[in-house]
Amino acid sequence: MVTSDSFICAITGSNGYVGTCVKNHFAACGWKILELKRRAKNEAQAISYELGKDFQELALRQATSFVHCAYDFKPVRWDEIARVNVQGSRKILEFARQAGVKKIICISSISAYDGCRSLYGKANLEIEKIA
Image (cartoon, rainbow, N blue to C red; front, side):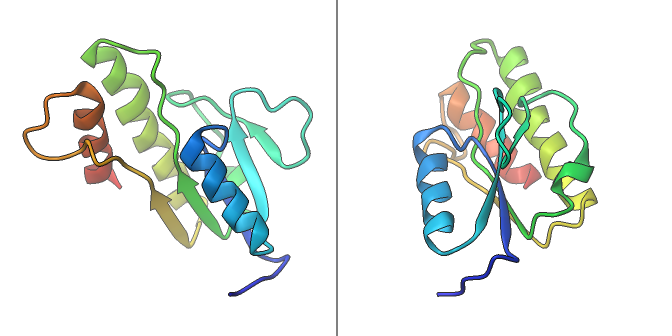
């Protein structure tokens, strides 16, 4: 197990179940956590971020690793899901690349497979292709 205060992991979706597990694991290994979250309320290790919205990649320049766990369940029509989740994921993954983050991880779903019927699965499959 590698631990160091110089390792910083940026995480989207850190308030969800999987994101919380990822955040807790990295923290237990001694990593600093930078949470990208909708309501960052004056938290020292959090930045305001909403999937699908523009974001300043400069905020990610300090990150050693980036884990994308975010998915917005509010949109229900494919055009909204594609705009918010698929294109939003494309944006944040591109921002991480532009910021020079060395390790980028995208969390998906077992629902994502060719021929899946659910819009959630289809969106995650598209996000996997982008990642």
